[in-house]
Length: 248
Image (cartoon, rainbow, N blue to C red; front, side, top):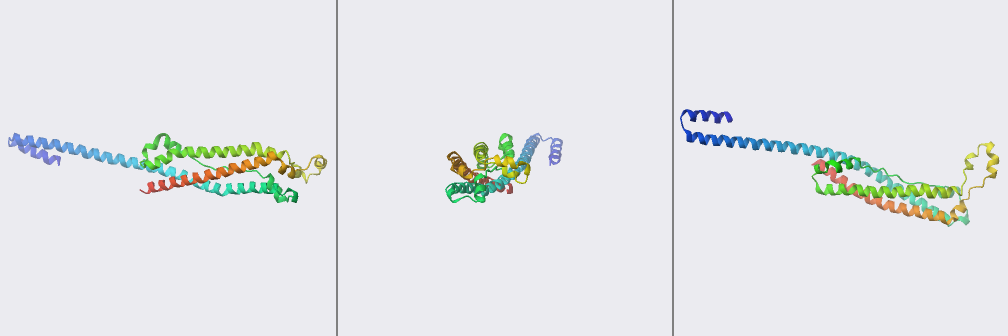
């Protein structure tokens, strides 16, 4: 195209037609401007393509983390109610002391445990720090921005529960139980076992402090279950949007 115009320019010069040459010169300038605009547009398309590729990589990374979180939260949604029911049974056993405690009941009374949900946010932390502007979906950005605080609240409550079980419940149980039963098959400790007071399950279940601890742990687990349900719902919502954006 440019060679064609240059050929015309040479012809106009040869014919000594300055007016037509000026027109040609203007046309060539316009041609150059159009070429520049086209080059800029192509560059913009390339930059947009690169940005979309980078965004897609971010979305895929986030989707992997949220998928893992969903799996962990779903497991906790099964396990936490089991723990709550276990503490319900301890309270029921406390009301049946006079009827006698079976071995199964005794195991319920001394069982301690807690749930540690593996909720990860490594990719999200990185994105929020330096790459959030690459995400084009405004609704998704708002959900991602508020997600860390939900994780923090959930983990804090879970941490409170762990501390309560380890530092309060277990010491209460140890004050009423002995581990001498683990020495049953070792004759050298027979005299020791005679002098050790047996485990007092009934006394433990009559201990007001211990029963308050059980009620407290049950309450925390109930609250934790509610937060787990809410976090699972929020995680599932974000995961669905991520998958939809990836497919675009």
